[in-house]
Image (tube, rainbow over all chains, first blue to last red; front, top):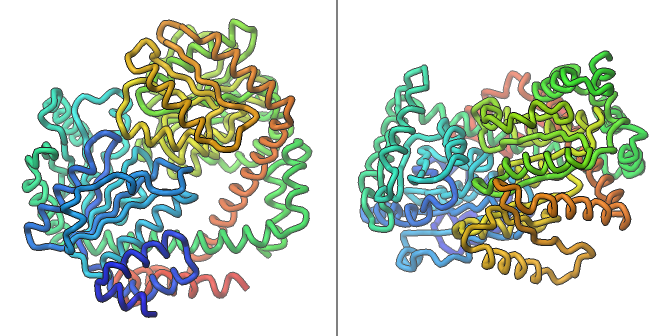
Length: 312
Length: 312
């Protein structure tokens, strides 16, 4: 396949076209990913996540520039899972730093939800692999999110940076509890705002609640991304985490877990489409739906009826 | 089943136990839901959603009290989809209005994610049915959320109230674009804050963008929930929407769509568990995962290998 070859050669237009194909679930997409997959696993993948308003885009842009200064090529995938109906990425409309997009060592792409969240996390995982196969040294996946969505999305990352800001309300506390377990590094952005010490203490307290002492305790860093303050230290810490992953054997463990997750996801999706196709072709399907809506039967009985002939 | 009978009799302890069973996916849960299902469809289900910090809990509590004043019994399900790892509902730890929880005409329950978001939206849908079968007149499903999660959760509602507050940042604009399509009623809470007129105009402009003129244009209401201001008008509007649904035939259409959604969800889940069980029992499974992690094969080839013997 010519497209796969051009992606492997690092051609920008090919990378863009390849990502579009996997986003649209084009019929060539499985073959494309099958060809690229053996060439993946070389890039260092960084996940950036946190609540809305934490300044993740600015942080991502500054971090990308820092890695460029260090001689690395950088791919950026900005994921917007919060817009289920807009049919495209709102982030894509945003003007990102122009000097970054003009740099041939940077490839930047936004992705939004088209359909299911499962579809988005699969598409993101594949976009990471395309950039990886294309030879990017660093891939940053930035996602706005406060739930399961970004948890699945950042599963593609070696290092997850959770970005928080001082002075957000009580709901944010709940978010923090949820993302504690996925954070490899905490980064307090807008660290020139009031409340930074309190937030730092809160994070430390949460980390102390963890009874098992992990080999890697997520460090808590501070940045003022808009002023480029603390970015270099953040990049150092991310690299330190990568070294820890490599030396502890955790990198192999994580990548095996990711391969297992991807296989099971793909398996489910394949089976789902197969069975949904079979069932919805059934003449009785819409009749059974109406019966259930009228409470003349129930979903459990309907599913049993539909599946009995399929699952022996 | 004694538990189902007691739920139908409206016994509080039975309702609580039934919800716990469906939350834990107890082996009795399908049978319980099958028995209760024919007795559902009577309650008026209201979904309350919106970004963190919009004051949804206070609004829900005040709205519940308003419906109690109107002689209705009220079930409240407070859903917290943003905490995938805490293993329980953070909202449950919050002290809700004590006078509400002491009222025998109110049943209040919090639910958090245990495992998948799909699991949570299924559990929420079932909890609504339990309260419905138990004879609650009004069921309010309150969910913190900014993404696909709350879209799926509020699918259980007849009327979706989207709560917004003035003066939130740019990310919130993105959220609004996402929830526009699910809103039956917009409610600007904290309407004594600055920026209320601007927000109202923004919502109206978004509604005007809709080229097809809907039969029901979502009205934009204002409340100061903490001071109980505007709550009665909100309850009136919700009832007006319910009347519209009934008279236009939309209620039947929505409930048929919901039955279809529930059947397809249950079908997928059943098939998923069946196939995952078969596949993970395969001796070669972990070997194939390792091969993929080492890039000696790829997920697409693995899935083909695993499914070939199962799907004819």
